[in-house]
Image (cartoon, helix red, strand yellow):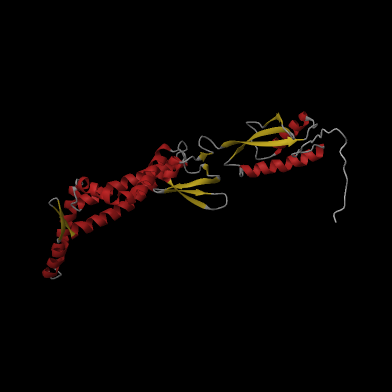
Length: 317
Protein backbone atom coordinates (compact mmCIF):
# COMPACT_ATOMS: atom_id res chain seq x y z
CA UNK A 1 0.00 0.00 0.00
CA UNK A 2 2.87 2.54 0.66
CA UNK A 3 4.23 1.77 -2.82
CA UNK A 4 0.84 2.56 -4.33
CA UNK A 5 0.70 5.82 -2.38
CA UNK A 6 4.19 6.83 -3.50
CA UNK A 7 3.30 6.07 -7.10
CA UNK A 8 0.18 8.25 -6.92
CA UNK A 9 2.13 11.11 -5.31
CA UNK A 10 4.94 10.95 -7.85
CA UNK A 11 2.42 10.90 -10.70
CA UNK A 12 0.74 13.93 -9.19
CA UNK A 13 4.04 15.82 -8.88
CA UNK A 14 4.94 14.98 -12.47
CA UNK A 15 1.55 16.17 -13.66
CA UNK A 16 1.93 19.43 -11.74
CA UNK A 17 5.44 19.96 -13.15
CA UNK A 18 4.32 19.58 -16.76
CA UNK A 19 1.09 21.47 -16.26
CA UNK A 20 3.00 24.35 -14.77
CA UNK A 21 4.45 25.09 -18.17
CA UNK A 22 1.00 26.06 -19.43
CA UNK A 23 -0.68 27.41 -16.34
CA UNK A 24 0.26 30.08 -13.92
CA UNK A 25 2.36 28.61 -11.13
CA UNK A 26 0.52 30.74 -8.62
CA UNK A 27 -2.77 29.02 -9.52
CA UNK A 28 -1.22 25.60 -9.01
CA UNK A 29 0.31 26.74 -5.79
CA UNK A 30 -3.12 27.73 -4.49
CA UNK A 31 -4.60 24.42 -5.62
CA UNK A 32 -1.84 22.50 -3.88
CA UNK A 33 -2.32 24.64 -0.78
CA UNK A 34 -6.01 23.70 -0.69
CA UNK A 35 -5.25 20.01 -1.35
CA UNK A 36 -2.61 19.90 1.36
CA UNK A 37 -4.83 21.69 3.87
CA UNK A 38 -4.85 19.72 7.10
CA UNK A 39 -8.43 18.98 8.08
CA UNK A 40 -7.64 17.20 11.34
CA UNK A 41 -4.78 15.39 12.99
CA UNK A 42 -5.38 11.88 14.34
CA UNK A 43 -2.67 10.57 16.66
CA UNK A 44 -0.09 12.75 14.95
CA UNK A 45 -1.18 11.69 11.45
CA UNK A 46 -2.49 14.63 9.36
CA UNK A 47 -5.71 14.12 7.43
CA UNK A 48 -5.48 16.41 4.40
CA UNK A 49 -8.05 17.14 1.73
CA UNK A 50 -5.86 15.41 -0.83
CA UNK A 51 -5.57 12.19 1.14
CA UNK A 52 -9.30 12.26 1.86
CA UNK A 53 -10.18 12.64 -1.85
CA UNK A 54 -7.72 9.91 -2.78
CA UNK A 55 -9.25 7.59 -0.18
CA UNK A 56 -12.77 8.27 -1.49
CA UNK A 57 -11.73 7.59 -5.09
CA UNK A 58 -9.84 4.46 -4.03
CA UNK A 59 -12.82 3.16 -2.05
CA UNK A 60 -15.22 3.81 -4.95
CA UNK A 61 -12.99 1.94 -7.38
CA UNK A 62 -12.53 -0.81 -4.80
CA UNK A 63 -16.28 -1.32 -4.45
CA UNK A 64 -16.64 -1.67 -8.22
CA UNK A 65 -13.73 -4.11 -8.36
CA UNK A 66 -15.19 -6.12 -5.47
CA UNK A 67 -18.53 -6.45 -7.24
CA UNK A 68 -16.86 -7.42 -10.51
CA UNK A 69 -14.57 -10.04 -8.95
CA UNK A 70 -17.36 -11.59 -6.87
CA UNK A 71 -19.62 -11.89 -9.92
CA UNK A 72 -16.79 -13.41 -11.96
CA UNK A 73 -16.22 -16.01 -9.24
CA UNK A 74 -19.97 -16.72 -9.15
CA UNK A 75 -20.15 -17.33 -12.90
CA UNK A 76 -17.14 -19.65 -12.89
CA UNK A 77 -18.30 -21.63 -9.87
CA UNK A 78 -21.83 -21.96 -11.23
CA UNK A 79 -20.48 -23.65 -14.37
CA UNK A 80 -19.25 -26.49 -12.19
CA UNK A 81 -21.92 -29.17 -11.96
CA UNK A 82 -20.55 -30.41 -8.64
CA UNK A 83 -21.47 -27.17 -6.84
CA UNK A 84 -25.07 -26.11 -6.28
CA UNK A 85 -26.10 -22.66 -7.53
CA UNK A 86 -27.07 -21.59 -4.00
CA UNK A 87 -23.54 -22.39 -2.79
CA UNK A 88 -22.15 -20.26 -5.62
CA UNK A 89 -24.34 -17.34 -4.56
CA UNK A 90 -23.18 -17.72 -0.95
CA UNK A 91 -19.56 -17.69 -2.11
CA UNK A 92 -20.24 -14.57 -4.17
CA UNK A 93 -21.67 -12.71 -1.17
CA UNK A 94 -18.83 -13.73 1.17
CA UNK A 95 -16.23 -12.71 -1.43
CA UNK A 96 -17.88 -9.33 -1.91
CA UNK A 97 -18.00 -8.61 1.83
CA UNK A 98 -14.36 -9.66 2.29
CA UNK A 99 -13.05 -7.51 -0.57
CA UNK A 100 -15.19 -4.56 0.54
CA UNK A 101 -13.71 -4.74 4.04
CA UNK A 102 -10.19 -4.93 2.57
CA UNK A 103 -10.67 -1.85 0.38
CA UNK A 104 -12.34 0.04 3.22
CA UNK A 105 -9.38 -0.52 5.59
CA UNK A 106 -6.95 0.30 2.78
CA UNK A 107 -8.77 3.56 2.08
CA UNK A 108 -8.55 4.49 5.76
CA UNK A 109 -4.84 3.81 5.72
CA UNK A 110 -4.44 5.89 2.56
CA UNK A 111 -6.18 8.78 4.33
CA UNK A 112 -3.62 8.47 7.18
CA UNK A 113 -6.28 7.23 9.57
CA UNK A 114 -4.53 4.67 11.82
CA UNK A 115 -6.54 1.55 12.51
CA UNK A 116 -5.62 1.76 16.18
CA UNK A 117 -7.90 4.75 16.48
CA UNK A 118 -10.86 2.40 16.37
CA UNK A 119 -9.77 0.78 19.60
CA UNK A 120 -10.11 4.18 21.28
CA UNK A 121 -13.09 5.53 19.40
CA UNK A 122 -14.80 2.16 19.24
CA UNK A 123 -15.77 2.19 22.89
CA UNK A 124 -17.31 5.64 22.68
CA UNK A 125 -19.14 4.76 19.49
CA UNK A 126 -20.39 1.52 21.00
CA UNK A 127 -21.93 3.45 23.88
CA UNK A 128 -23.35 6.20 21.68
CA UNK A 129 -24.78 4.20 18.78
CA UNK A 130 -24.68 0.68 20.16
CA UNK A 131 -28.39 0.52 20.90
CA UNK A 132 -29.30 2.04 17.55
CA UNK A 133 -27.07 -0.26 15.48
CA UNK A 134 -27.64 -3.43 17.48
CA UNK A 135 -30.44 -4.64 15.22
CA UNK A 136 -28.45 -3.89 12.05
CA UNK A 137 -25.36 -5.70 13.29
CA UNK A 138 -27.44 -8.62 14.51
CA UNK A 139 -29.05 -9.07 11.11
CA UNK A 140 -25.72 -8.67 9.30
CA UNK A 141 -24.00 -11.33 11.43
CA UNK A 142 -27.07 -13.56 11.08
CA UNK A 143 -26.82 -13.19 7.29
CA UNK A 144 -23.18 -14.35 7.39
CA UNK A 145 -24.19 -17.36 9.50
CA UNK A 146 -26.94 -18.23 7.02
CA UNK A 147 -24.47 -18.06 4.13
CA UNK A 148 -21.88 -20.21 5.92
CA UNK A 149 -24.04 -22.70 7.81
CA UNK A 150 -26.80 -22.75 5.15
CA UNK A 151 -29.86 -23.83 7.18
CA UNK A 152 -31.70 -22.14 4.32
CA UNK A 153 -30.37 -21.44 0.84
CA UNK A 154 -31.48 -19.89 -2.41
CA UNK A 155 -34.33 -21.88 -3.94
CA UNK A 156 -35.47 -23.60 -0.72
CA UNK A 157 -39.21 -23.89 -0.06
CA UNK A 158 -39.85 -22.72 3.49
CA UNK A 159 -42.85 -22.09 5.75
CA UNK A 160 -42.97 -19.06 8.04
CA UNK A 161 -45.96 -18.77 10.38
CA UNK A 162 -48.13 -20.75 7.95
CA UNK A 163 -46.95 -18.84 4.87
CA UNK A 164 -45.14 -20.80 2.15
CA UNK A 165 -42.50 -19.27 -0.08
CA UNK A 166 -39.27 -19.77 -1.97
CA UNK A 167 -36.04 -18.15 -0.81
CA UNK A 168 -35.10 -15.71 -3.59
CA UNK A 169 -32.18 -13.80 -2.06
CA UNK A 170 -30.17 -13.67 1.16
CA UNK A 171 -28.95 -10.11 1.64
CA UNK A 172 -26.77 -8.38 4.20
CA UNK A 173 -29.73 -7.36 6.37
CA UNK A 174 -32.76 -9.34 5.23
CA UNK A 175 -33.87 -12.33 3.18
CA UNK A 176 -36.30 -12.08 0.28
CA UNK A 177 -38.99 -14.81 0.17
CA UNK A 178 -41.22 -15.18 -2.90
CA UNK A 179 -44.68 -16.59 -2.13
CA UNK A 180 -46.98 -18.52 -4.53
CA UNK A 181 -49.28 -15.46 -4.50
CA UNK A 182 -46.48 -13.53 -6.28
CA UNK A 183 -45.76 -11.49 -3.17
CA UNK A 184 -42.34 -10.89 -1.62
CA UNK A 185 -41.71 -11.18 2.10
CA UNK A 186 -38.76 -9.22 3.47
CA UNK A 187 -37.68 -11.21 6.54
CA UNK A 188 -34.84 -10.04 8.84
CA UNK A 189 -31.96 -12.51 8.84
CA UNK A 190 -32.05 -12.87 12.62
CA UNK A 191 -35.59 -14.26 12.35
CA UNK A 192 -34.30 -17.52 10.84
CA UNK A 193 -31.95 -18.08 13.78
CA UNK A 194 -34.32 -17.04 16.57
CA UNK A 195 -37.64 -18.49 15.37
CA UNK A 196 -38.83 -21.87 14.13
CA UNK A 197 -38.75 -22.04 10.33
CA UNK A 198 -39.88 -25.14 8.43
CA UNK A 199 -37.56 -25.89 5.50
CA UNK A 200 -39.34 -28.31 3.18
CA UNK A 201 -36.34 -28.80 0.89
CA UNK A 202 -33.33 -28.75 3.21
CA UNK A 203 -31.98 -32.20 2.26
CA UNK A 204 -33.98 -32.85 -0.93
CA UNK A 205 -37.08 -31.65 -2.79
CA UNK A 206 -39.27 -34.71 -2.07
CA UNK A 207 -42.01 -34.34 0.57
CA UNK A 208 -44.74 -36.65 1.77
CA UNK A 209 -48.39 -35.64 1.66
CA UNK A 210 -51.06 -37.29 3.82
CA UNK A 211 -54.80 -37.39 3.17
CA UNK A 212 -57.35 -38.68 5.68
CA UNK A 213 -60.67 -39.92 4.30
CA UNK A 214 -63.65 -41.35 6.18
CA UNK A 215 -66.05 -44.01 4.91
CA UNK A 216 -69.43 -44.90 6.37
CA UNK A 217 -69.72 -47.97 8.57
CA UNK A 218 -70.55 -51.04 6.49
CA UNK A 219 -68.35 -49.95 3.56
CA UNK A 220 -66.04 -52.61 2.06
CA UNK A 221 -62.70 -51.73 3.64
CA UNK A 222 -60.53 -53.59 1.08
CA UNK A 223 -62.29 -51.84 -1.76
CA UNK A 224 -61.78 -48.43 -0.12
CA UNK A 225 -58.04 -49.09 0.20
CA UNK A 226 -57.84 -50.14 -3.45
CA UNK A 227 -59.62 -46.96 -4.57
CA UNK A 228 -57.28 -44.81 -2.49
CA UNK A 229 -54.18 -46.40 -4.00
CA UNK A 230 -55.41 -46.30 -7.60
CA UNK A 231 -56.51 -42.67 -7.30
CA UNK A 232 -53.16 -41.57 -5.87
CA UNK A 233 -51.16 -43.48 -8.51
CA UNK A 234 -53.27 -42.05 -11.32
CA UNK A 235 -52.27 -38.45 -10.52
CA UNK A 236 -49.35 -37.37 -12.76
CA UNK A 237 -47.72 -35.28 -10.02
CA UNK A 238 -47.46 -38.20 -7.57
CA UNK A 239 -44.04 -39.85 -7.64
CA UNK A 240 -43.80 -43.50 -8.67
CA UNK A 241 -40.98 -44.10 -6.20
CA UNK A 242 -41.55 -44.14 -3.28
CA UNK A 243 -44.92 -45.69 -4.10
CA UNK A 244 -48.15 -44.39 -2.53
CA UNK A 245 -49.40 -46.30 0.48
CA UNK A 246 -52.92 -46.60 1.93
CA UNK A 247 -54.11 -48.21 5.14
CA UNK A 248 -57.16 -48.60 7.38
CA UNK A 249 -56.34 -46.36 10.33
CA UNK A 250 -59.14 -46.46 12.90
CA UNK A 251 -62.74 -47.11 13.90
CA UNK A 252 -63.83 -43.58 14.68
CA UNK A 253 -67.07 -42.36 16.25
CA UNK A 254 -68.79 -41.60 12.97
CA UNK A 255 -66.66 -43.23 10.26
CA UNK A 256 -64.10 -45.78 9.23
CA UNK A 257 -60.93 -43.72 8.93
CA UNK A 258 -58.48 -44.38 6.07
CA UNK A 259 -55.22 -42.63 5.27
CA UNK A 260 -53.29 -42.41 2.00
CA UNK A 261 -49.65 -41.33 1.80
CA UNK A 262 -47.90 -40.18 -1.38
CA UNK A 263 -44.79 -38.23 -2.32
CA UNK A 264 -44.40 -35.20 -4.59
CA UNK A 265 -41.41 -33.25 -5.88
CA UNK A 266 -41.77 -29.60 -4.84
CA UNK A 267 -39.52 -28.44 -7.71
CA UNK A 268 -41.04 -30.35 -10.61
CA UNK A 269 -44.62 -30.57 -9.34
CA UNK A 270 -47.12 -27.83 -8.65
CA UNK A 271 -48.06 -26.79 -5.13
CA UNK A 272 -48.59 -29.85 -2.92
CA UNK A 273 -51.96 -28.47 -1.79
CA UNK A 274 -53.13 -28.37 -5.41
CA UNK A 275 -52.09 -32.02 -5.84
CA UNK A 276 -53.98 -32.94 -2.66
CA UNK A 277 -57.07 -31.12 -3.95
CA UNK A 278 -56.92 -32.97 -7.27
CA UNK A 279 -56.79 -36.31 -5.46
CA UNK A 280 -59.74 -35.34 -3.25
CA UNK A 281 -61.84 -34.57 -6.34
CA UNK A 282 -60.86 -37.92 -7.88
CA UNK A 283 -61.67 -39.78 -4.64
CA UNK A 284 -65.11 -38.20 -4.45
CA UNK A 285 -65.89 -39.34 -7.99
CA UNK A 286 -64.49 -42.84 -7.38
CA UNK A 287 -66.51 -43.19 -4.14
CA UNK A 288 -69.71 -42.27 -5.91
CA UNK A 289 -69.01 -44.70 -8.74
CA UNK A 290 -68.40 -47.54 -6.25
CA UNK A 291 -71.43 -46.65 -4.14
CA UNK A 292 -69.34 -45.79 -1.08
CA UNK A 293 -70.52 -42.98 1.16
CA UNK A 294 -68.09 -40.51 2.71
CA UNK A 295 -69.10 -40.45 6.35
CA UNK A 296 -70.24 -37.34 8.16
CA UNK A 297 -70.56 -36.72 11.92
CA UNK A 298 -73.68 -38.43 13.35
CA UNK A 299 -75.05 -39.58 16.70
CA UNK A 300 -77.48 -42.32 17.70
CA UNK A 301 -79.69 -41.29 20.66
CA UNK A 302 -81.34 -44.02 22.76
CA UNK A 303 -84.16 -43.06 25.17
CA UNK A 304 -84.64 -45.35 28.15
CA UNK A 305 -88.20 -44.68 29.53
CA UNK A 306 -90.90 -46.63 31.33
CA UNK A 307 -93.49 -45.95 28.66
CA UNK A 308 -93.46 -45.08 24.97
CA UNK A 309 -92.59 -41.50 24.17
CA UNK A 310 -95.50 -39.60 22.72
CA UNK A 311 -94.61 -37.61 19.59
CA UNK A 312 -96.99 -35.02 18.21
CA UNK A 313 -96.72 -32.71 15.24
CA UNK A 314 -98.39 -29.35 15.91
CA UNK A 315 -98.92 -26.39 13.71
CA UNK A 316 -97.13 -23.18 14.62
CA UNK A 317 -99.70 -20.44 15.20
